Image (cartoon, rainbow, N blue to C red; front, side, top):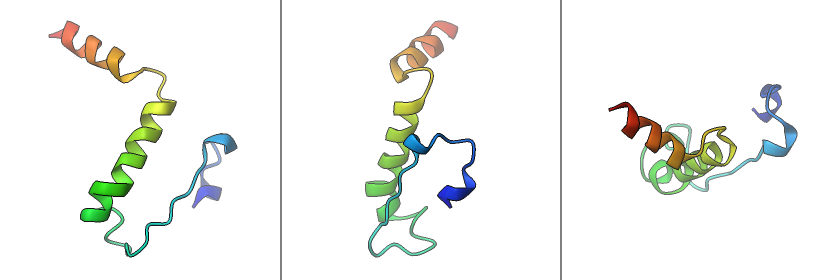
Length: 63
């Protein structure tokens, strides 16, 4: 699947093999909540142009 991500810099590509998680379990259940979701959120936070604290300040100011 990483080969399909032609717009993503090679340095940002990583892979994770979750032991015991099947096709459904990757996006639902305990494996998703405890292991995979945190990896996805960390990736988004690391590579986001806007840092989480800045996003929160913008949302708070908009209210």
